[in-house]
Image (cartoon, rainbow, N blue to C red):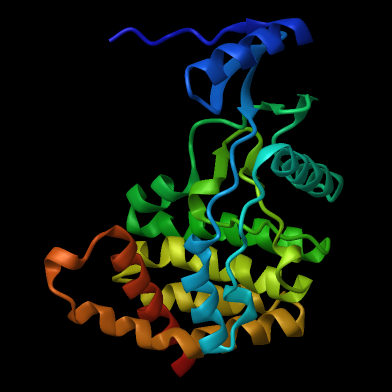
Length: 268
């Protein structure tokens, strides 16, 4: 199979032409080369319908957990401005994020951090190495939180690993502070990271819980308490293990193992 060569863009006129081509093809993100560097061209997309977030919002209220409040991504040009602002703030705090090569009214041109995301690295790692990869994501969260920052979409699939440059993060299309406090946004980071990784420690739940305890010892008391409270209130999710195997799809399995981790950590 022939892999298409990313278009080479040297100036804003070339970017505008590629934006028009991509939009006509119905796309919103594509790899390109910007003045010799691998990059991504990202276009504005419509805002997601509000109804998709109403059920999650009701669950957050029921559990008394503002950190679980869904954050509706901004669409259109405003969404691109949000992402650009979040990237600049995290970069200023010393965190590895895509570089903003250039911006337009309805597009962003971002540097490429690499192809190796943290989720498959954790999933396919030997059992003795899995926790070390998990710790890299935890360290990134701690670095962001010490700088009074947050990610909002801290799923392991949004962390990109490079042996030369270390760990970076991508996907900043929403801003958690539009829906919650900074402390809750940082609690949310931990919950999303745990949700996206707990299933890969099914045979090592106590080890993951111990690593989480060690990481939270370096958090602000409000964040540490918020994570622990959220885990206590979501331990019941472990009962999803009783579902028939035909219903145990990936997100359901991840939720079940998040509940198993929550129960074990709550018991500690």
